[in-house]
Image 1 (cartoon, helix red, strand yellow):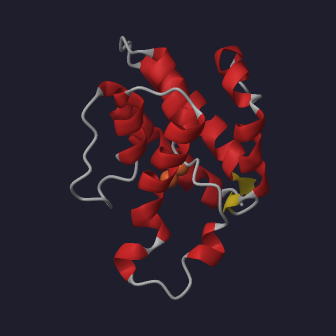
Image 2 (image 1 turned 45 degrees about the horizontal axis):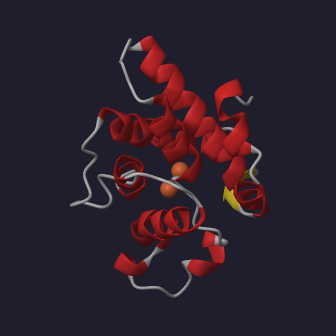
Amino acid sequence: MINDEILVIANDEKILKMKDYIQHGKINTYDHCVNVTNTALSLAKKLKMSVDEDVLIKAGMLHDYYLYDWHDASIHKPLFQMHGYTHPAVACENAKRDFDIDEKVEKAIKTHMWPLTLRSVPTSKEAWLICLADKACALKETINR
Ligand SMILES: [Fe+2]
Ligand SMILES: [Fe+2]
């Protein structure tokens, strides 16, 4: 389900390219990003947190904007060069290249894999929500495959 507020970015043709890549099981990266964005928005609502929804929506939709098939890309790579560690930085560079994003969105993208990326710790409410929503969605998508 796509929340009305994310329709604009969700229909961007560059964002739609994420439909070409599998994230977990049968879920493509685009659907995963929609799930993460909706989960982060509803978590904020449930917890009655005042958040910048624009940051949540951009960071949610762009947090995995790395645009490659990670199943191929992780083969024969040393541990710290594997997808799990490197894709937040790749997604952030792609997002900066293709969209107008501020520093808060950049940091939320770069820190969404914490604690795997030890030193990249979320520093805003929005970044923590994306980090939590990403884990909840990844678990749900993997179990439901
Ligand atoms: Fe990710
Ligand atoms: Fe993700």
